[in-house]
Amino acid sequence: MERRGGWDFADLGMKQTQYLTHFFHHWTAKFIPQIPARAIERYARPGDVVLDPFMGCGTTLVEAARLGHDAWGTDINPLAVRIARAKVTPIDRAQLADYLAWLKAASDKPEAHLADTAALFEGSERWFRDDVARAVRAILDRARELEPETRNFVEVGLSDLLKGISNARMDRTMPQLPRTPSYVDKKHYHRVVDNRTRKINPFRRLLNQLRRMSAALEEFLRLARGRAEPILHDARDLASLGRTAGLAVTSPPYWSAQNYQRLHRLSFRVLGLEAPGTGEIGRRPRAYLGEMEQVIAQLAKVLSGHFVLVIGEAQDGIHEEVRDLCVARGMNLKDTFRRKLSNQAFFVKAVKNEFIYVFERRG
Image (tube, rainbow, N blue to C red):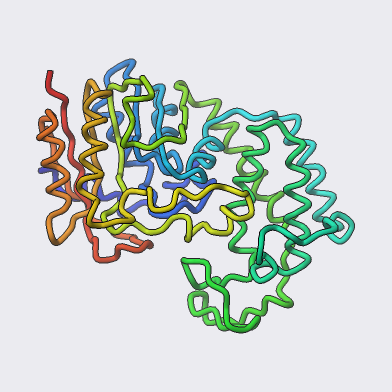
């Protein structure tokens, strides 16, 4: 087993882990790009197509394309797929420039650019102040004039801002309304937040967000030597896509996976996305191993090279059972690495370490 520090990356700060398009969205529990990057550099052969069956927001796809490999990934969550598309897909830069010019004018005089209606979804008046909701409505209405990928780019940028401009508590990971408009933010220096009076200019926030995203996407497209394709699809049915890969790199959902549609509920509602419901693996802990076995069986059909599995260490040994499922499906365990989770900001705080299992397909 390789020494633990080899895969910890504990010395890296946000700047080192949020380069290129990786910062586009605060997607929950994504792994740092150094992990798939190292896996690709070590185990991908020249010309290998890279696959991530639990793609999430596309970290593996970004790194594969950057390193010169075509890549495809699947996820059952439509918001994840839209984020991944925004990270790797060219947009109409002239259209975006016009949209940014409109945002600039709206940010300077927001009252002149608000929509007539504040309706975003049923009950949205509880989540957004009237002026904020009307600004969001105007942003969405204007984005409908854009071609599909540019519109998606704008809406992903907006999605990342929604919780911060809403009435939701700033000190909660799960969107939660305070009991009163004024509350104490227990996460950020115990300051008092008053949702009735705090300054919120959605036009300006989105303008700044999209400017950063646009520069990052331009740099990514300049550097990328491979093509990445995110696909809305269930990993339990990979083979039906008729695609193959020479390397798979993934971090599957945990056996007690968080409810992503609740975490990103505002994005689902504002953007009108269909939630995957209980279909997400990990939402039913008792079914976890059976569902993972389905995915591994499908993976064995489409993969011809290595499989790098990044999975949390469980006290009851579930990670080892998933490892053994891979071996049972004709994969030789080639390498095992253990990494410490030094900056774990998400839910499964009992998970202190991750295992990185590297398999090689037999035959």
